[in-house]
Length: 344
Image (cartoon, rainbow, N blue to C red; front, side):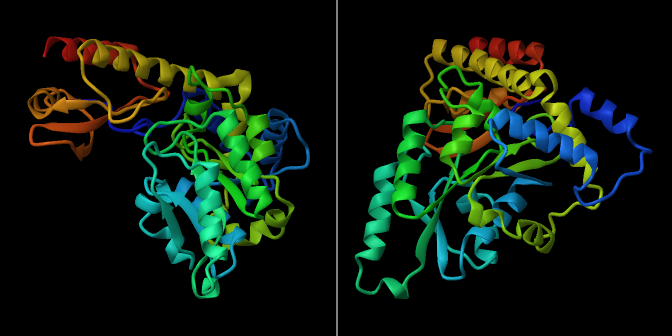
């Protein structure tokens, strides 16, 4: 079976494994205070084009989201997210478990708009009984979104301006950030994201690392005592250098972006074959996730040789599924899938 169901089925890029092996017997200080983490922090600050940001390394995405959101909110405050947002549907109530409600807004494309945020803010604060309800304080977005769409610079700028105007915190989940930044229609970069968001993270788990996410914080209020929260939420890795080594390696010779671009290119080959075959899509995506709507009979035949993710029922005989490529997807396997799509 050839897997196209997610982007973290493989282990790690060989360069990371090599560097981890080379440094295996070195003795370093723990908890992310080693020279490897400091070097990775230096590189990320350089990539973001500013020295006034804080950089922290955590192990996984859910852990990162709950730690950042817990740091940002008081007990009576909540996080605004799209109904499809990862914290709303795929984190087992982790945010609620920290004592904060997810305030979900409907979205047809996985993205939130500035107008939606303003409406949600006004609806709350114009209500005479506002103090009896969870107060919206943080806006959670992901780029790419859970369904493969990406924010444009104009969209993110409008969101940022609305958040600043209303004293809201804008936080971007970047689990698949590289795949978004390398999409053919993307016009964002790390510098712009760092300028417009109060905090975001650069995902490693889904883009070539064994594990790990790099949190970037520009909001001064969020910086204070953040390491206390990392420790409290179980995110302070004793062997912290394992994270620093991975991220410094990911950014050597633009490896992170080369891998991300490869995944997007493989995804576009699949998308082209689906379009040529006449299959519609649940959502338009230029990243490593494609969501075609296909006859169940076709999916059954493809399922004999390929693993994909079931997404949702469309009607009695059609379903939407997800084909997902990764940094390690082999072109020869994509070609096989393309040929199978064309032949059925």
